[in-house]
Every structure is written in structure tokens, then in C-alpha cells.
Image 1 (cartoon, rainbow, N blue to C red):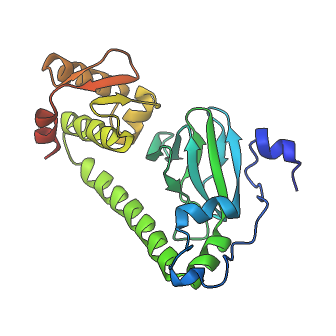
Image 2 (cartoon, rainbow, N blue to C red):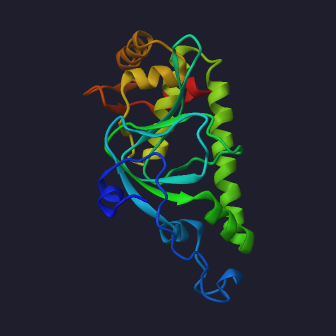
Image 3 (cartoon, rainbow, N blue to C red):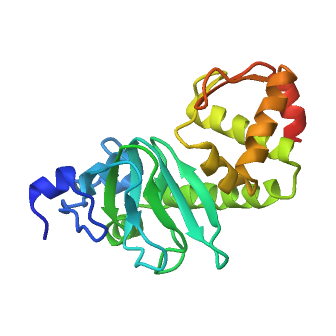
Length: 237
């Protein structure tokens, strides 16, 4: 068991967070007054941990014993292919939950993109809560369904042209960040390339082309302004 200082500052991959009693007061599971949602219940069952930039959170094929909610920062999931290339499976931003594996082992590794804080919750505790509360079970099912749809949409994305992939990615990030037409990207161009199945040169060239067409503005490498959403939506299909 790790010391409390490790909980606040270290980044163990096999940390067992101190569990609080997940059982609410009698009658709460009827979803009446005082009933809690999954998002309200998660902090009562886990612990917040800090992960510096580029720190591994868990590795591929390791036991999928925990769920993770991004409190601040950002996370990428990835795997290294047999030829040495990196395939990024997804990006997770504040409020996102990941680690929703259908198997007992992780199919991807996870790594902090920036300095990140995560709420770490034991999966068995969430499963036990869901077994007693139909509302929690539905929320968990919805979360899993959204993750599956995101993976399916990414598969469809990989058959599009480079311009269509980049436009779709920018629109997705704008929607998830809820910051209007300004997209602050925590990930690098290489991360974007590995997510979209492109080279970094192609990503940079495509962004320049979209900027020349007045669809976007690129003030910095990490900030992109969507100037013509209808044009980007047309590319998105």
C-alpha cells in the first residue's frame, strides 16, 4: 500500500485507491430524493492521482481493474504495432471516463499528454453499485455505448481523405471542448497524425491548406480557430 504522499504526487500503475463505502443511505436506490448519479458517486469510491506529462497510466495487456475519470489535463490511449508504429486509440479530456474495457485486460496503453489529474476508481466497486441501482447501471451502459460509438466513428474516419480526417478531428475537438470556434489542442501534431493514420507532414500540410482556404486560422501550433464551420462540416460528410 502506498503512502499518502505517493497518492498525491506519484504515479503508480498498480495503485489501490482507498475505497469508501459506496452504499448510499437506505432508499437512495429508488432514485428518489437524495439519489446520486454515477458522476456524483465516483468521487466517493476512488482517489485523485496526479500524473506528470508523458507518464504511463497503465500498459497494454495489464489487468483492467480500474476506471479513470479525467479531472484535469488530457490522456491518450495507444498501442505499438508490430512494425514499430504507434496507433493512438483515443484522446480523453476533463470529464471523460476511460478504462471501460469489455475484457479483463487493457487492449491499449494509456499515457498522460499533459500534467494530468485522474479520479481512479476500482471497477468492482462500480459494478457492485450498478448491480444495486438501475439508474447507475443505465449511466454506465450509456458511457460504454458512447465509447463504442467513438471507436466505430474512428474506424469510418480512417477511410476518408486526409482533408476530411483533419476536418472531422477539428470539429470533434471543438464539440468536446465546448469553447466555441477556438480549439486548444493539448496533443502534438505527431499525436494527431498517429490518431488519424497520417504522417505528421500530411497533417501539417492539410492544416495549412485549410488555413489557405480560410476554413481555419492557426495562430499557434496548439490553437486553431474554426473560421468556416459549414465548409468543415461539408468535408466531414
